[in-house]
Amino acid sequence: MTDVARRDQLAASLAEVRERIARACVAAGRPVDAARLTAVTKTYPASDVILLAGLGVTDVGESRDQEAEPKAAAARAAGAAPRWHFIGQLQRNKARSVAGYADVVESVDSVRLATALERAAVDRPAPLEVLIQVSIDDDPARGGAAGDELWRISDVVAAAPALLLGGLMAVAPRDWEPDRAFERLAVLSAGLAERHPGATTISAGMSGDLEAAVRHGATHVRIGTSLLGMRNTLR
Image (tube, rainbow, N blue to C red; front, side, top):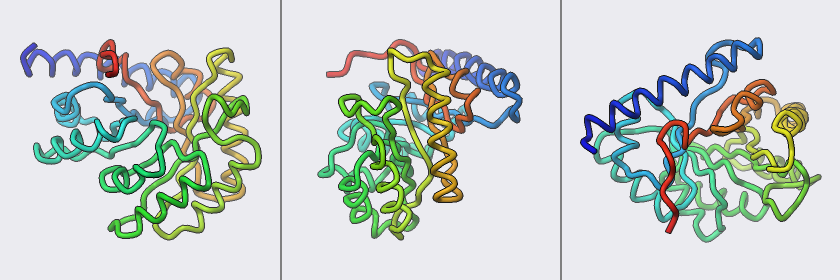
């Protein structure tokens, strides 16, 4: 596929996704721009990131450091400067690498990881924004902070000068109705904002359940398949 054809394809998908988000916001009684798009570009080439940036996409999400780091460098070399969100499971030994290119890390789920990011981000020109990934059903096997660990992590991040506590991220458990999952997330977000005013970001909702997420207050939705097409198999 030529660059022009791919750009046209992405432009059409982007228009549909933006319209879908806007409709969801209006249906929820929220401002039409209340939820922001994060384009999940994992497994897609840097050329797609560059094309999306040219189409006005400001935020992109990646989940593997070994893929994201060179992709961010390639986009930067081409003059594209989106906000990079790291959304995948992050090992502490990758904290310094991720802090070098990411603007937001959405998957912080332990005090140890928060502390590693604090050390890694100390030389950045601006604080590294952090979202705490929470476990909606408190099942540790699914990943995400559960129970009081959420509050412990939030206190560590809020006290770290090199970090900025943005809010929460979650993925709805597959065996839960999305509305049930995101309603619980909204309750947790309200509790976090009461403890740390200003930490009001809610990153929730993907291609299959963004309407439910927006209905319950999502400020960012992470969209991959509906925007970029079926994803290639990870290798």
